[in-house]
Picture 1 (cartoon, helix red, strand yellow):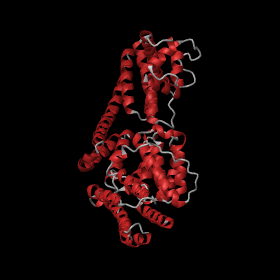
Picture 2 (picture 1 turned 180 degrees about the vertical axis):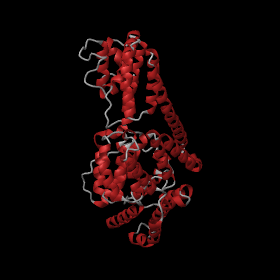
Picture 3 (picture 1 turned 60 degrees about the vertical axis):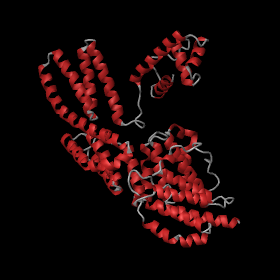
Picture 4 (picture 1 turned 90 degrees about the vertical axis):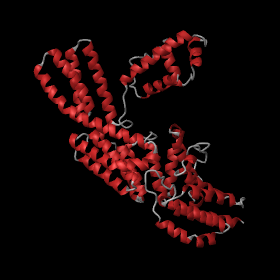
Length: 498
């Protein structure tokens, strides 16, 4: 039943007004009635559907036949979808259209309508070449070879053979590039092995990918080469190189050396915004994000990560009112419930940090989203090297804000254990320094003046300590320097109440 619900949703969402395989005006038709029941959400289970359609739950044979028939119609209807360009990549849409045309041509060949099939193949070939879909070009040319053979067109057969040889070479390079990209991506799924193995192999991998691109001039090969190059710069913490790579790719697009349908505006916009955040170019980053928002359909799966970068840039730039506006827009109408659980938990963490900042920055009392995005954080606490540190810092500041709490030794012990277990090495320096500053606050009995004075040395060290800067370390939600000012403000507020 779940598959049927998803198919009905897809067909409804991506179809034109007329649906050729279903007569939606005929409510007496069981197929139509079943479709409308699913579409309206009136039935959730097979038992509910059988009861609504047949008046009893035990019509198993009849219901199974109806369900199978509707499923086949819905699957067939996938050939008639209208995919909007704002939501899907141009390459995906063009490939879908080419595949549909190719299927039509193959059907006509089976039915011995060779000349008609040839016309459809010509249409598909023009679309494939226009959008640099080389794998589709090969499939279409191979079909045309059979057509030329059947029609006895020797000249066309030879011309097509020569063209196929050219595209076979391109396709061979593309296949190798795809294989390399997938092999690397599988390894990177395990981020613990990625550090030790991938970085050593990356230069040779990038050299081969660049060679394949230069041999083939394929935009598909460049696309995967570009993604791997960006990843390498991320792993080495060179975010200025990330910005440079995106800028270079945009120049290639302008010069016509990379096909527009293969250029992923969403990916490049996202990664450049993140790189501007990592290199502390906050104002430039905010301007860039505001210019590029048009490439993202609001509340789509790629829009939410881009809005995360927008939110973080605003917070780091101390544009707290803008950050509040961003998070309100992102959380409104519960669109966020459709994203992955880990992503929802990050937004909950952002919301809680913003509530803390709101108290000091006097953003007003109109922040609507005091309700939690998720009731419990399950995944983030397991990320000991990433967001779990942000959780610990948030919990600590919230506890320091509690005027009814006087015993902070359990918190101090928790912080000491975390430092010794997880914050080792040069890349953990900023997190380690800030947690030491929190320990100092507890040691000084939460006295704001003593904490400020004795924390000055640690603050100086924090200001010159470099962030981790690699792809495995999470960015600080609020820079520790800003959090230190918040902590001191919390201590002053607490002292004023006593």
